[in-house]
Amino acid sequence: MNKYCEQWDLNPLKLPQHIGIVMDGNGRWATKKHLPRIAGHRKGVERVQEITEFCGNIGIQALTLFAFSDENWRRPEEEVGGIMGLLRWYIRKEHARIKENNVQFRVIGDRRKLSVDIIELIENLEHDTRFNTGMHLCIALSYGARGEILRAVRKLVEKVNQKEIYPNDIDENIFEECLDTQGLPQLDMFIRTSGEIRVSNFLLWQLAYAELFFSESLWPDFDTKKLVDLIQQFTLRERRFGMTSEQIKKINQKSF
Ligand code: FPP
Image (tube, rainbow, N blue to C red; front, side, top):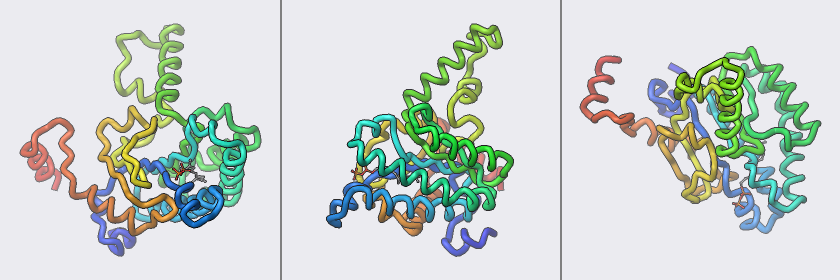
């Protein structure tokens, strides 16, 4: 039994394989404390470090964090610059730790809009962790799910034009291989903090069978204990994938 699961009273056999989090509420957290918005993002990065370490420890296979959306480029220049500065700082500071902790790092999104030095930091970390076998840490940066789906469609059209595949070959598996998240386990659990009940263009394809959770906490207040509470709720949900409750019970009995 994993000692962290034991410590937090989590059933390791019922954990979500892949958790996606919309880390919302940094700005409101700072405003409530009469601080500049960037102070909220700074505190948000501390939570990223805490939650990532915890997920790795309990054996989550993939964690995808929404750090910066395609739409976030419209924010004031000063805030965009501040968030990019934090990202730079985070990747530089965490590079060695991520690598040594056997984490596989990946950035999803349209990275062409990022500055050259940030792209280089990302590519170096992706390269240095490509043979790691532990948790996938996936950061959604300059990311929008509709854009991701369009990129996948373009890749497929190109494959058809090159006669690598026929249109009739295209099934869900082939489509998923063209998404930024290719190779990651199915998304089981979606969390959005800050009380907003929206998906906001995050992992739209991948959300098909995910369990949705909305926390009232602002992201800088979202600590390990709050995540554990939600994971415990996740373990109690019955996931039927279109089947009946009776069928699911039979399948579960067989697997024990
Ligand atoms: C949403 O809060 C948060 C963001 C747009 C940025 C999130 C960025 C970080 C946590 C830091 C960088 C991440 C990593 C992985 C190092 P908001 O600003 O929309 O808050 P509000 O809705 O209260 O205004």
